[in-house]
Length: 397
Image (cartoon, rainbow, N blue to C red; front, side, top):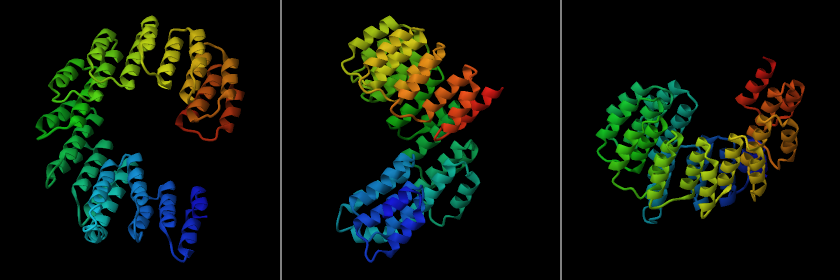
């Protein structure tokens, strides 16, 4: 009953039902906590988490998973480290007491700060930060990240410089903050001063350089990489070369890779698509030892890019388990080639639709000046986003 209420957004009724229970067990406590998280009431969920008489692994996993899925990695790591400490049964009572008295307060405020920063409420986040009587290194890192993500790089740097002590996450957060605001020179200056770098530090700079087309700088950093076993930096270089039309350099880089993964192969496919080299791309596709739906989608999209709708349709029909992207890709192909009825029929056949597929069909009607149909479709949409509204408005212009 608690779960039913929570899943339907009736969280007060769920809590009322929970409070009426004579004695909760693992399942009821975890269900109540999951209900709060399902409704994005993380502070309430955390309060339940702290009150659980005895937490099981699922209790910890719920909180850690929620944090990771919402990008609150530092908070997730803080919980994870505490869980590891808990494995020592001698330390459990002491850790729980310490966590309840001090750690719980700090962790809760850190969570609040992270969420305020993500929602752009930077003044409220600052207020919470200044009023905290206890702070840890995660508190500072979260606030630096919040400032940077909201364009306040000066405040982020000021706080970074004031930190009692920094860790590697602090340095990476400051670097990422500058890059988020396209301040590459400042980011590089922080990168150079780092007392210690991990793979994430290198990936930050290399990926950014490839994204803005500064491939020489990216390559110089790549050559300095102390450990070239990881595929992420290799893939970043392949993307950089391929997206800037340098397919031969990308190909050379690709074949030098010691450990290629499926992402690497798909990135090369995407590079050939951008250049419109479908013959080479098909040969490369046949060379692949393993393919996924992304590989097939890229080929279908490549044929649409060069105007070969028949080959795109052939590839689409060979996909064993097409996903929403597969359907939207071919739908847009039909629409872009004036085949509105075919696009309409395909939309009706889709086994599942998300807001992107609805928007694609909406745009198809608008581009074909079928405004009445566009309006009817708009009213049928189960959910709408900014693209939906913008597309509809454009139909009247």
